[in-house]
Amino acid sequence: MTHVTISNVRKVYHTAARGELLALSDVSFTARRGEFVSIVGPSGCGKSTLLYIVAGLLRASAGQVLVDGLPVDGPSPDRGVVLQNFSIFPWRTAINNVAYGLEMAGVARKERLEQARGYLDLVGLGEFASYYPRELSGGMKQRVAIAQMLACNPKIFLMDEPFGALDALTREVLQHQLLQLWERDRRTVLFVTHSIDEAVLLSDRIVIMGRRPGHIKQILDVDLPRPRNPEQVRVIPEFTRLRNFVWASIRDDSLNDGYSKTDAG
Image 1 (spheres, one colour):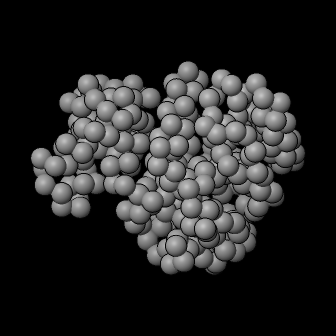
Image 2 (tube, rainbow, N blue to C red; image 1 turned 60 degrees about the vertical axis):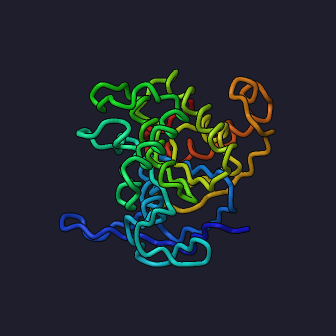
């Protein structure tokens, strides 16, 4: 069953210095309920812009986004967002960060703290409930952000390079943890990443975008067994084939731009 429908989305930015900038051109695809969809492409192709439109944080210049058949006209607790830059409050402890959405929803203090602690336990941070973000590592901050999103119980996870600023080891640990969380509840996920390995490892389908104006080049099915153990999946020949296919598609666009910021790892 279709959960998210993106139909002919177009985004134009208006700037005083350069006039109109066409960021997205007629982008269309769907995500089925419970599907994990990654969005990849060269830098500047509008991946994050598209995700922000789905989140309701930006308005499309044309086209529309539907969730369960209803148009997106702003942010909603049904759509949880996790960003690359640790979207948590520096003045709140880990547990109070996780409880923030529940607080805004009017949940009583005792109940919201109990729920928040449960989500911190789920991401392995129960013993750090009283810590402030400045006392946590980058990976721990991102787990707090994921727990904060989970606490709001959204139907859709929108994740924009959530592991992009982390070291390689922490990134792999959180990839594995995200797979486990997704297997548990099977929420619909739209996941923007520059890492092709990450996209192949996590996804049911990969949306490959072309360089600006951002457009869909191809949508690729990822036919790898689930549940996925990262160490086991990466040695399957089909994993390598898919990775190389996506890399070749993005590399062509990047070379045409004269540079590449795409992470093939």
